[in-house]
Image (cartoon, rainbow, N blue to C red; front, side, top):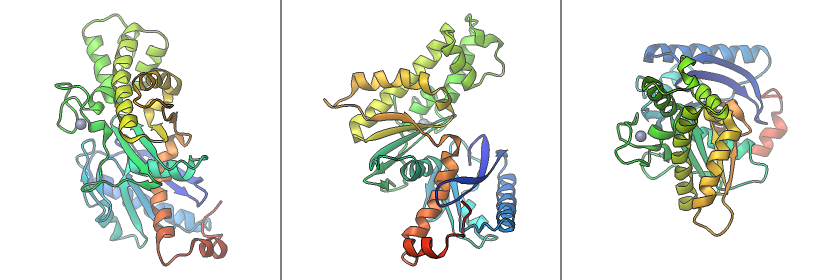
Length: 323
Ligand SMILES: [Zn+2]
């Protein structure tokens, strides 16, 4: 579940997406629940007709999720969503249903399916209209002590800075997200500054990045300002946690080269250790990271269950999911 789109997908045990559908996120609670319920039932039926048996439903949600109760506790960018998404779906779907924060799902996807060197400590940052983050430490998803948040996006980076969706001022999300970049670009246009962005309506994050890459001075200023704060925030994470790898995901990574070109030198310059900085890379999973991660919730649920032997599962049920 994203603030812009809902992505439905079916994943097999190899992490391959065998079915995918994207629809715009509705803006009311009842419509959202109706669409989730209807589409999930339809996809299960479609899969059954192709000989694919769905073994569970994983959901990634933009906000704070209590994984034990399945409640969406707080979602600053999707305030209308009911907190009882899993409970409502369980009324009509007789399968395991797991829900977790979408960036935490992406971190599971990175650990399971974008981790050739077997890294055990990975920090993931989702860069979109909001900024989410999640930590894999010692090969486990870090859940926190209380409400399970690891929100780099809501750490303070600019005292008395712009208002954030969370209600605080000066969070990383409020200065470095795509929303912040669009806001600052619009402000520059409204001030009458000379920029190609004047003709780029409606403004999008990609248009501002493209203008910066093309050399537009105003766009360069706006994007550089956002990425300066982001680079500092990532430096703080590396100095605090010493991860093996920082993985960037989300819409902003469409401008991968420009993004890394701006951020990596800031981390190199301010890195605490005398050693190398962690690998900083863009996810190879692309737009599928969220759905692969949500499906990973179910995969982990099945294989961590005491009643299922993974070896037995592979030997005796190879046709349960399509290749
Ligand atoms: Zn915030």
